[in-house]
Length: 102
Image (cartoon, rainbow, N blue to C red):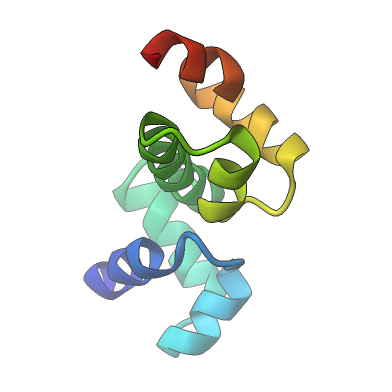
């Protein structure tokens, strides 16, 4: 089940996904999925997905994609959310990151 959960996240992180949707797609209980992340991976589901999204956004920024395009292409629903989450994980804004790599 853990492998299925991780594979699902990796395959769908650029899309709007939730515990409820994943549970339905994988025929698992959402509380079970949440516990798998907490107990087995020492991270919560949302943080795991956001980390995948930020890593993807970094690669898009490195390919000279705009900040806005990178955020949406990585699965974030708004630029505001993208900026906030990116700052949390990278300790700098997407715009600052882009300037550093140029």
